[in-house]
Image 1 (cartoon, rainbow, N blue to C red):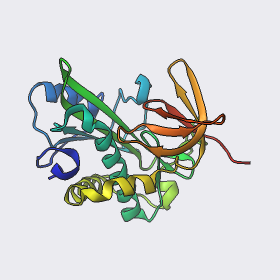
Image 2 (spheres, rainbow, N blue to C red; image 1 turned 90 degrees about the horizontal axis):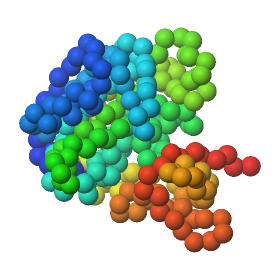
Image 3 (cartoon, helix red, strand yellow; image 1 turned 180 degrees about the horizontal axis):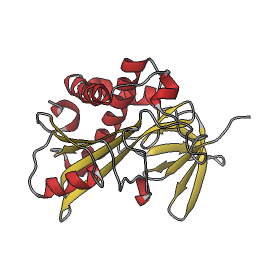
Length: 251
């Protein structure tokens, strides 16, 4: 299971918690203690949730699907970008299958409905020296937040309750994401075209905030390392491996 795309074989073993600090932190600790690939942890509430760049993320209890996957990819660090891509595609497909909502991906790790964020994906490596021993991938999907939404988030986030007009069962979402990953394992040839088709960043003028500044250009491709390839206004191209993307409005 998942060997075709993600380079490891495991059976899913799903555990759940009413509350924890962070499902990612829990599975990083479990990985160091020898937990098997395919371990999945789902929480009703996180008190110390995090996003990229160690940003904090707080969600009311039960409002989000909070899950983390423990993987031990055979290809090590070279497989990380494909793992994150596969999880993103699986989330987009799960949302579509359960609700009919057409979600998309914003490079590198956000799931959008329109231009508002529905879900985030955070991958964390567990290293032994310079070798990647395990990878933990966390997924947080906004499911059904209490109304009204917080004023500072209402314009930038969306949940499935608003997007689909009905509540979606958390367990069904977890199952659909894992089923989607199993499907990609059985059909690895689907990953690249499915990822590009879901990536709403491609073809857009974007600003990428990188260490030490920003890069502006048109996103035209994703290379074999997972980097976003930009066509620059003055000519030429630049591949950006890490950064925060802002989709610029077209006039």
